[in-house]
Amino acid sequence: MVVYLDHAATTPMIPEAIDAYADAMRQVGNPASIHSQGQSAKRMLEEAREVIASSLGCDPIEVVLTSGGTESINLAVKGIYWKRNADATRPVILAPGGEHHATIDTLEWLETHEGADIAWLPLDEDGVLEPAVVERALAEYGDRVSLLTLIWANNEVGTIQPVVEIAALAASAGIPLHVDAVAAYGHLPIDFAAVRRASGSTGGAGLVALSVSAHKIGGPVGIGALVISRSAQVEPLLHGGGQQRQVRSGTQDVAGAVSFAVAARAAEARLGGEAVRLAELRDRVITGILDVVPSARLNGPRGAGRLPGNAHFAFPGCEGDSLLFLLDMAGVSVSTGSACQAGIPEPSHVLRAMGRSELEARGALRVTLGHTTTAADVDALIAAIPDAYAQAARAGLSDRKTVLGS
Ligand SMILES: Cc1ncc(COP(=O)(O)O)c(C=O)c1O
Image (cartoon, rainbow, N blue to C red; front, side, top):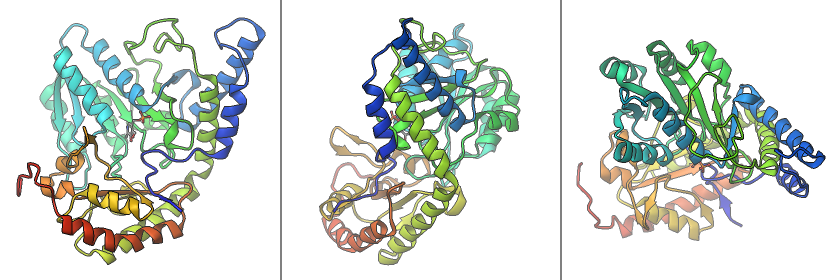
């Protein structure tokens, strides 16, 4: 039996979402067609959009369906940047370190190809972006800022950001904020309109865009959404048939949307109880692992400041990837959380952004829990850790360019 503890990478589709997907795929009809099959497809699509919108606290018209989180983030960040910097007066984008690669690589692309000036904001040692840091950056860069982008909850270390406070700062500075809520969705309540209200966001200032993805909440891979407030200005990435407010052309994926909606409704229904259940299991992981390997260190905050299903550790003197492979051989699937570039394990850029040394950032291990996780899964992980760690520590650190103490 394989114990799957990598729900942040992707979580199993719930059976109802699989059934709804299969049923919807049996029906023909392009929602843009005038005939009755087209209109029936359109009805299914728009009903799905309503459910997705309700799970995000926004209006259906604000939901632009995309191929997933990566596309949503690209559309929001590039689209807002291009609109706001059309006259080249606002080249600065504010972003914290430790974002997902979908954001980092988009920003680096804008820097290389479009002359963007990225101001990377420092995180504290728990991975929190302090509002005071944002306030200082807004004061420093002022009118030259095109947008601020921020992850709601970090997919690697689980840190939850003070989104409302930061949105309020953006709102009062007149700057649009995009939030990557891919890792938060399904685990924390997300209410787009409530955050806009609470932060005083109006028009195109403050929270204007928010990215989510279906495969992180029990829906299919290949569909996600970008919530774009009515007043936000976004230059499209894709041009064609003008679907979805001209912002995202292309025939819409009715079956994907229907399945996404089923997963969204289920995730919303289980949210409160599931958060408590997962937080208990997460704390069992944390206590259990620190018990069997006292030298391991928990990364990110404890308690309410972190995602209920996330536990992330630094194991001294070994490569996170060695641990991962050894646990895999023992039948437990986990992750380091960080990217592996061309087969070479990279030290976690999130831990580096939190001020950890490269050495510490190399022994990272991420355990993420989800709707199928049981206490027996957690116990199987804890039972497998001592041997895996002993072997990984014997193998030590590979001698690729470790800069001691850096
Ligand atoms: C925080 C975060 N943002 C963006 C993404 C990318 O989403 P997708 O896999 O749907 O492209 C992920 C996926 O791991 C994520 O965790």
